[in-house]
Image (cartoon, rainbow, N blue to C red; front, side):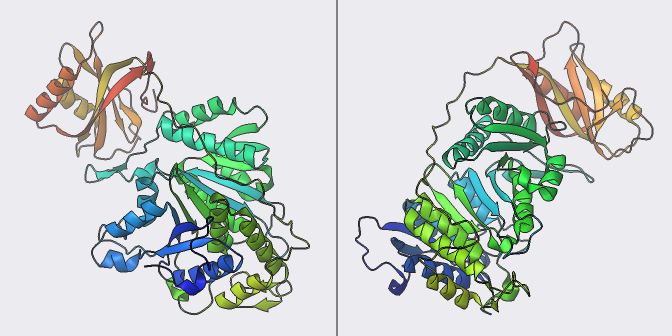
Length: 494
């Protein structure tokens, strides 16, 4: 349905009018959405608002994605989606609406500014000003999981070259447009040499196209420690999905409060804007929630759609309100705050400060802000791909790798030989250690005998003989080289 006309701009035919979709969500969502819209519309946002219903009610009505088909049509038509937090019911096969929306609409870039508002919001890092740019569609968030044996489940980590190139280029273009000086990449490619290794390689390649911007790479564990201890070392940060999800929340909290942070989810044709916090059902309907996270997301939305002067007015009014010490309960602190207020009162205080500027905090200017327009990904020429072997994953409840090897060698041929058995990635045959604990999930690697060429027919033959020998094969992975370089992991211990 359309949003109530008393909160919409007076002239829906105005040439600058932008039609957007909103969803009030669950828990505190309706309160903070009403407060946010009241502020930005009073500030002069030229918006025509169309509301859809998403979240817990839709889930419980039988839609596992939390959103109806007609709502998808509205979001896709309007292309700009401002969403309050929602509640995803536990169990029952319900899918994350956020993850689903990001993937369906190809919202590949998640942008989360994490800024200190010291001394008005308590923080140990008064100089913090970090923007975390997170890949938004891939990694473990592909959600491809399987139980393979009684003791082992797996989750596939998918990293693609197009995904890496788009997010890394976005980070450098963001840094260039907003005159940021450095882009930092976090990966764990000392362990995940193929997946995180690809992300790091693409980062290094693209960084060469931006010589005016400093670049650096950190292994994510020590990098995360540095971020938590000395965030002033960082400027723009880019990383795969999981690390970005975790560390953007950490960064928002050490900047002052997760409740103050908004995020943008950007794609080539659509964009979604939201607070990073949850729906907080315990606080619902009590006029207590802080609308600042959703308001910050709305400011990012206004810049994205070209209404920069309104975004600037709202942000400076919000900063002035923070300076005035008019705070909701979550950031209220004796000695710094002057008045504890509710959701509605906070919104009215920001409205009263529209047109004002902060005195201590740095006023903002968004005159140069605009959507980043990146070139479409261009697929590279294919590499020379060669099949070099296969890993058979076996469900076997024994504990002696030598015993298993004796069984598995029965399915060898003169052309194909068993070369290695691993358990949880550790080589246990040949020459394993008796101290190594083994589960019931074994990887058995087959390579061609000397002078032989491996083919897909060899894989079929192995699986056929495994079935004849009552060997329970739960999965196979082909081993390929690309342009002569092996593109698969070796067993640890080799």
